[in-house]
Length: 448
Ligand SMILES: [Zn+2]
Image (cartoon, rainbow, N blue to C red; front, side):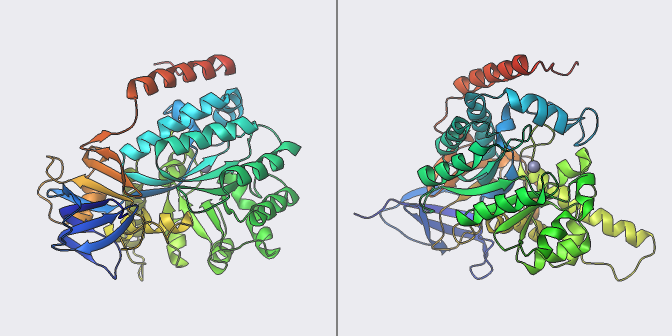
């Protein structure tokens, strides 16, 4: 039996794979879950044809760190910083999160995941620090499966209480029950609390557990004042840093600590919007680039910031330029190079795939990789005429241009509409869950 074939015809194709190239006009042939060919004038007589004229076809965006359960808490703390008397930590993690039942985590996740698909994100790492019971794990994993996305389920310890003796058993159980193979849309990682938020011994034990289970590690480091204590350096000196770890933020790490990440092959996730608005410290983009490290990008917290990668790309690119121009205006010389649109689109795709441990499967439109791609409309008034396709994606487009989204050859969005989701029901469930969490926690929504 031959697998189903789809021919995406006459699009502007950005493979982002230098060995394949980008094309002003070309076709993409999908066979089953994989890309089988890219190039001009492909023919496949038995394939279903999708017209991509007036479209840019490119790899789906990849988000490497988002607390997806917060979907029902969207924009609830836009003026609230990370630390302080009323803060993200006190309000979201210590007041609202403990009120979540498994069904609230489920609907929070669904809301976050469908909006990610809608925005052209095909792979997302769910930093799921809502794991209060074993059932919370199943609820979140079910939502990830239901969405159809490619995702990394990063099991996260709840932050409002100390890890108890159950956590390790639940983690082992989930790894065994749901992640016995890596040949599926969902893969497994451990979202560890990290040395800035728990003891060295606890951190070491969590990292060793991840490695025993062959799971990648994702960890917040260099976070505000907590990041200034040299804790990551202690981990490095103890030989615990390896190439299986993604370091989130890195804002207040020392240069020596950043070099340790480079030397051990680690990857980085920058959430520059959240870092700037919430007070994590100055985003580390230039310091990372100085050390030869290109970051992936991430949304982080929908409680505070927008949930699409267009915003992330523009935010990090503008910031890097502002920092260099500022030095130039101050008379400094021998300045580092500017990031360009191509650099930043690669951070939102290729570097995301690398940080999620999935570069062999996704991140570029390379024959043999999984068919995770998006089609972006170029005939909309906000973008025509397209003079530079990469510049248009990075600087001109927004989520309204996302026409189609495919993961592993399967359409999740077509003609600007999400597929396989009952939006009316989703909306009802979101408000119901949101109201439950507010009542249970005693939290009052902001006055207007
Ligand atoms: Zn985070």
